[in-house]
Length: 271
Image (cartoon, rainbow, N blue to C red; front, side):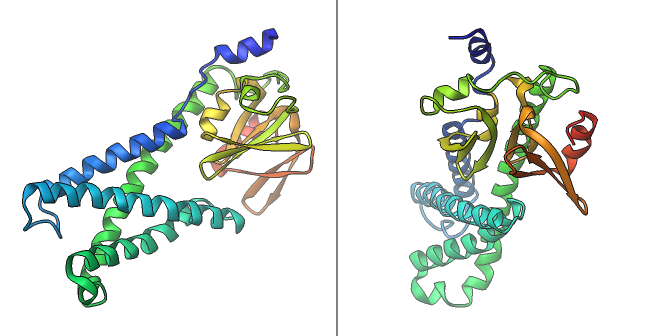
């Protein structure tokens, strides 16, 4: 093992939430919310015994969470294909998912008459309100974790101008990749995976982008977007279109730059 590889492994390998931690945390939070909804007698469980209220509250919230998570994956994938921000994917998931959940809840408690009757117009807005609350909660939690990870990288000197860019041929991230994987030039979040892009090759790895960024030397690259990490040594230039900026890698790949990061990259001499 080279000194560089040892240095990479000595860093914090699990910076940020891993996928398993995210899933377990979300399940726990949603289950607790189901308990709270049952205790306050939220419809449709307000007339049932406490045990049934708990079953409906916890089971309903976890079932709704599973539906919303699946639709969020579909929505964010569609948004990325259209070149939009991931948040537009949630704008799709919330109304569609809450409608599906409302239909299911009304059908289970009152049959097709309630599911497709006037009750839907009352229950659907409440379902959407709960969905917005959950998405806002998780967005704030993960955004806080992302900012903390970026701060840690900056504190280690990973984002400051003038840093050297160590090679990306042997890193802790390579331990998660097939043997012989080439230099890493970029990584991007795709659903629950990270697509690791190398010289002439790419691989999908089940982890978060924050976790993946913690497995490479901090000075070797930086997050240019919530969904993108790029190697400094792979940046060949940049281009602007209106208010949008992209870094151009030496392979020709164009990576979007978040507006809040553009000034930082300019100060670092990268764009």
